[in-house]
Image (cartoon, rainbow, N blue to C red; front, top):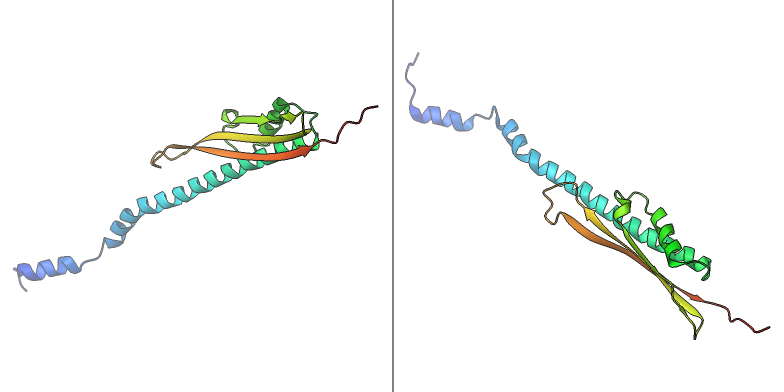
Length: 148
């Protein structure tokens, strides 16, 4: 039995030991994996919100076209607000609708824009918030009014 071991053999055994390496690797990779997971979730929310804004603008434009000039821009904006399904803070969305009728040609170009400030849930995503826009436009040609 040896009471004294050479320092080189002890250091060699220390470098070959791997009893806690899995825990250390897990500890180093866990923040990276959570960042990737939550980043993917935030990008999914961002894409979903953008599509919801675009859908609301397109539905409001379609709603106005079907009514052929019998509707006011404020009614178009109210309808677009009801179509913002899945958007977290619906009340912060700014909806702008224009439907001017050209008296010379008897046509109307309807445009609906939905602006929304998207707030990231995670604090470490760099911009913190982002402006999203959904817009749509449609053209209406009214039939000429014949005199009686």
